[in-house]
Length: 173
Image (tube, rainbow, N blue to C red; front, side, top):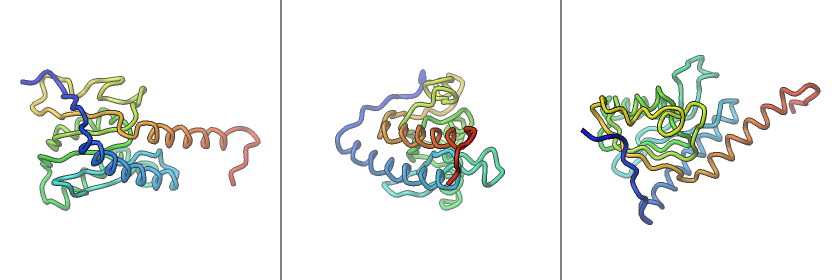
């Protein structure tokens, strides 16, 4: 059994593809931010086509599991009629949490591509290394840092604006 996730070097052609799909994930993250959700977006790609997408919705849906990754996995599974998403790639703007990393394993996602690291709750390289668990029966290849600056900026701007609104005397207009 493998020792953990495989870091795949990005080739020029792959880089263009990765940036294109990450661009769509960033658009979705911005949609979520406009609704007051933490700006995280995700797209699931199979054979070059987006088969599922989503953005964070836990606040508006009153569902703590409504993370962007889960939304994209649910949409893809429903569209394909199968909870196994073998051969797919998930693009997400931020490093997945423990729940989402585990869902990638259960869905048999082949590859994860993410933008920015999440030092507090990221479960791929930050606070936990879920995909490195040798007991898991599936390995997910990982590519990190695709459009990282744009993903990190979206989060920084969102939280800066949120803090400004919660300051005494701050205006919310």
